[in-house]
Length: 153
Image 1 (tube, rainbow, N blue to C red):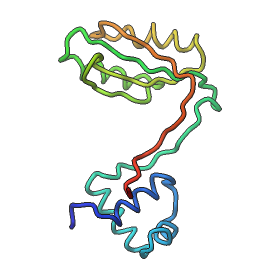
Image 2 (cartoon, helix red, strand yellow):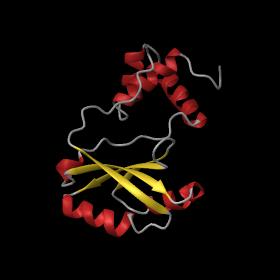
Image 3 (cartoon, one colour):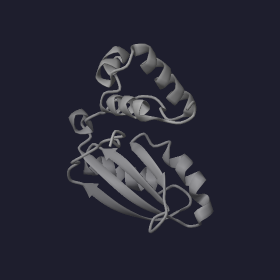
């Protein structure tokens, strides 16, 4: 059972994915277990690499970033993906990068303050990366959901 997840682990993950700052005592109360068990199980899942940390969920629009754009990137040669991804990680407005199959070689998510900011990012930072053959962009008009999988089903 040491390297496997059970229903108790799934309950802990579900609770923490809804509120990563929930105290272990509160998690324990909701899960019907002791705080020591929550601590032990959480440490186990961190050691397994299941829990990779905790993050804040930010509303970028309230911080002046009014645009969310997804970019499908075509590479000149598929073996260049590591080099292109390394360059993309240097751009602070790029918040997600996926090496993907299908139509695009890489799919990314970008936050920009406005269309001028996005144009500058696109033309001066992204399009200048060696190895990119072409890009298709998709502007998000509204995010309707962002969640983790509910592991208690």
